[in-house]
Image (cartoon, rainbow, N blue to C red; front, side, top):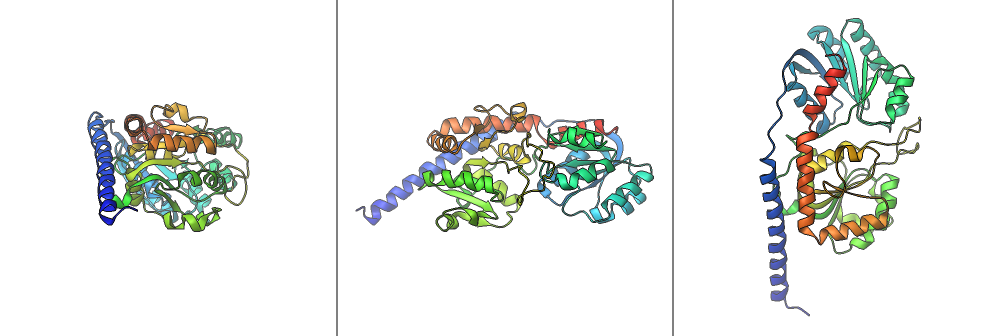
Length: 362
């Protein structure tokens, strides 16, 4: 049996190795980020009233991006957007998502705004999980944007002027930075324990015994061995600032898209198949951490698997790749940095908003 002195020495050695690895990662990200020049966009003589959805990770990124394009941007509120539009008279009212925090008179407010001669647009960020609600909302707007490929023909069939527009990352929030020991882990995942995620992790987690795995969010009591993993679970909502720190502190961040099957975990009454990547795909990569994600049809439009992130299709493949990348630091770091650079260059919200304004006729 090792003495206390031997255990302390082993702990110090392990800590030094871990610290050096994080230092190499932080330095590589910092050096690479300096090679990307911020994009500049011409200012449009345009006043926009932006109505957020109450989810800062996306709302703040979209608002900041709008300010890079439009001369005047006002941030409104779902319950008072009609009154604000009548007072401000913007050329465009842009609504983010239109769900969850929006009042019952949403449709009436949008109709009244259009009656004022003001163009309206909505950008759905939760497709295809709420088609029960979005099918009713889409025809209300002059222009509809969705990050989900499968939703475009669905909305167009109802007469909506629908466009595919992927989401992105807010580089002011999601970026690489050093973090403290308390945020470090081998594997991190944040999100709700939807049943497809539970089934996957029930198979993967036993192979990660002895590794530091952190799960954040709700519904994780659904795990078969919840009592075993409870000490590593951070229940409830995790603020964006904390999420970014955990992304930066992890060696690997998992991205497991939620199921699209209609049921208790979503309102996808139209039964649309999820073909597009979620915003988390961009946000994880923006932080310079290796991402392992399941595959959606349009993933390869935005990232090169094996070079800028990596993918899995089965629990066995995910397990094997986790163990591989945990033991191959240099390879893990190279892929993570390339993913960060791709996100900074191509997937910031500022570029997306230019396309939105063009297609909205602004």
